[in-house]
Image (cartoon, rainbow, N blue to C red; front, side, top):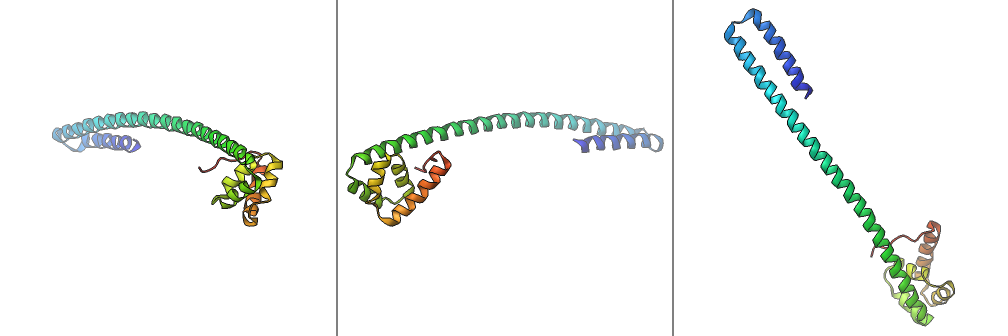
Length: 157
């Protein structure tokens, strides 16, 4: 935009200079060129305004999507928390030896930790007595992080 303004200024200056040194034919050609450039300038201004409106619209949609994404993530987190609460209750009802065996066989220690986290402490302790030591180490590490955060993070699944 600035370049067009500078160009117009230069052309106007050229027009003034040519008034003294060139004939009427050259003056008319220069005037036509100035008019053409002014029309181009208006077209560029309109395009800039149109693009600015599009940018504003895109920004509004982006903000709306971000808001919806945050709301969705909250819902997913709540669903996961409820899921682990229910799983914790299911594991509480199992025999501790059976529950410990199943937790030992879990591939994801994070899921196992969330199940233990959502169990009653006394029952969770009994179950942990039957969990393999290497899994216990992983679960305890995750549980420590969860307790330090004071709010269990949502699971990937």
